[in-house]
Length: 321
Image 1 (spheres, rainbow, N blue to C red):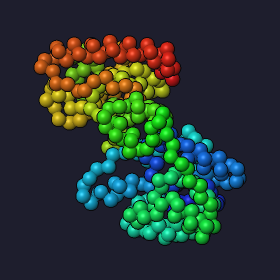
Image 2 (cartoon, one colour; image 1 turned 45 degrees about the horizontal axis):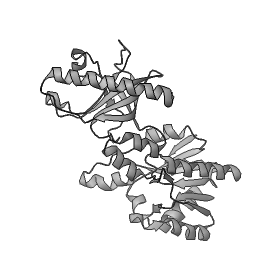
Image 3 (cartoon, rainbow, N blue to C red; image 1 turned 30 degrees about the horizontal axis):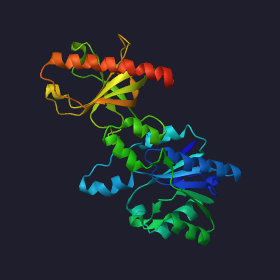
C-alpha cells in the first residue's frame, strides 16, 4: 500500500482509481466494509483502489480557532498502520486548510475529484457529506457523477448485533468505559500505544510494578478513567495486564496518566520500550483510598479478578493471539 500526502504527491497512474472518501476515524466494521467494496470493485475493473481522507480532522481544523480539542479514535499514523493490513492500493491524505474547507460541493468534485484525482468510481456510505459546511450529500454525488463521468455506489447503513456502527456511537461507548461493546462495533479491541517512561516508582513500593505510558498522539481518545483488563504487546510478545487510567486519586495527583502492570511476568524491564495496550474489559472506577494498604488490598483483588477472567480468554477467546 502506498501513502501520499497532498495532491501533488499523487502519481499520474493513479487516475481512474476506484475511490472512497471520508475521515474514516475509527476504521470500524462499517468503514472496513466500504473499503472492501472499493478493493473488490477496483480488482473487477482492473484499476487501483484508494482511500482519500483528511488531515487534520476537519472538526479539529474548525475548532482550532476556539481552542476546542477533537480527540481521535485513529490518528493518521494509526490509520495507515491498520490499512496496511488490507489489500488497498493507496491512501491519499488531503490537507485540511481554508482553501479546502471553503470549497463548495460541486467545486470540490470538479477541481479535486475529477481534474486532479481523476476518479473512475466513488463508493461512499449513506451518510457521506462533502463541500463547504457539509452541504453535499451522497445522493448529490450521484448527480455530479452523471455530469462529470464517474459512477457512484452508496453503501446502506451497517449494523452489528442490532447496533448502528458509527464512530459517534463508539466514542460514546468509550467515554462510558464500555470497551467490550466498543470492540464489537470496531471489529477489534480498542487500543492505545506509546513509550514507557519513568514514573514516581510507587508501583514497586506497592509490589505492583507499573509502566507509565506516554501516549504517542495527544489527540488519541482514551477510554473513561478506571481500571481495565488488557492485553499488552511489547517487543513482539503479548501479555495480559491491568491498566489504570486516571489521576492517582489516592495520592492527590492531578495529571491524567496511563499505567499498566504486566500480569504473571516478574522482572520485565519495559523502560524505553514502545507498548500497545488492547482494552478487553473494564473492572471498576478509579477510587480514592484512605491508606496505601487499602489500595494495595484492592490491587490484590483486582489481580485475582483478572486471573479468573484470563482463564476464560485462554479457553474461549484464543488467549494472547
